[in-house]
Length: 259
Image 1 (cartoon, rainbow, N blue to C red):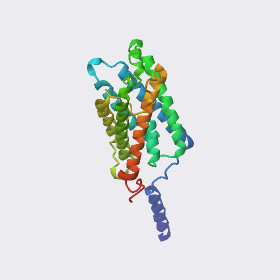
Image 2 (image 1 turned 90 degrees about the horizontal axis):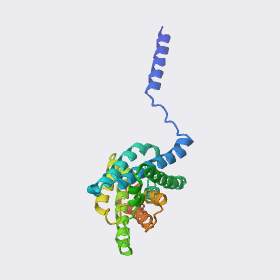
Image 3 (image 1 turned 90 degrees about the vertical axis):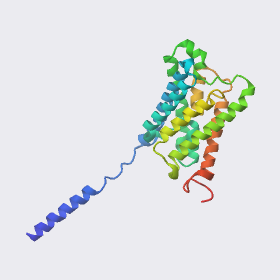
Image 4 (image 1 turned 30 degrees about the vertical axis):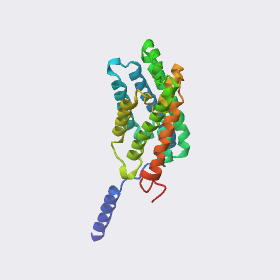
């Protein structure tokens, strides 16, 4: 009887031990590691550019910058929240480069992400063209950035794109990557930064901060006037933000110097 009781106790103990142990984490398969994140970037960028372009094309003049600012900001907050666990929710070539430079992603995923973002930008702009009225689409060149009309505007606009993109990229890197300042509200914070930047710089440069957002409408509407500003400015701003995080503002894990 004593032997049977001991056996029963051993069985119960082993069952309790097995039940208390957490199940081993499932290793993501190839689709989840490579293809799904790229699809997330393509779909997320497409819908961001689509909803952003529509807000500009069908913008009521009486609302000024309010309508595009709120739409772009809310779109960022919603899409980043939904797609964060799939792709990291970059939707912006500048963010991808900055995140890679700060150690947040592998090199082999950078080029696929950039390609998917640019294709998503074109797809989103094409969706906006299908949805909106032809007259409104033509009037604003399909929501391509048509604010710059003369050379004397370029310097201010370029500086604005650099500074505003640097700000939003720092918010992203500090809120998502930096351990000391990581914040679950980062989608909301990035969305708010988009809104305030558009309010601040909309009349100076149009507040692009995202080459994919500029590229898609430019392709669909064939509008390329001063288009280079919306590549050079955001990329330079993102690189400055990455350098600031890597050298000065990042925690010990990210910072390269003065550890």
